[in-house]
View 1 (cartoon, one colour):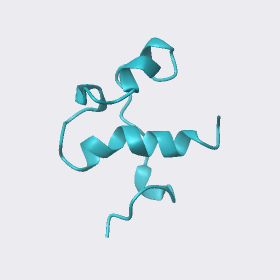
View 2: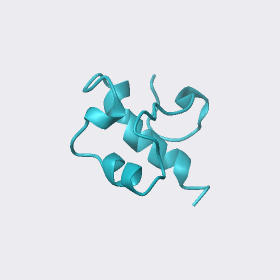
View 3: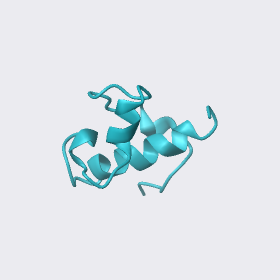
Length: 60
């Protein structure tokens, strides 16, 4: 699970990164709320320094 989590973080944070919402919890199409219920994330999770991860789409 540790190896896939950075990829999941990118997926959950993507709507914030692209200006669709201001907080991850606001994106209603996400599995984020399910993960909060399972105590994988806290409800106020905002991600890590995603720019330092080598996953997801390039911002360039």
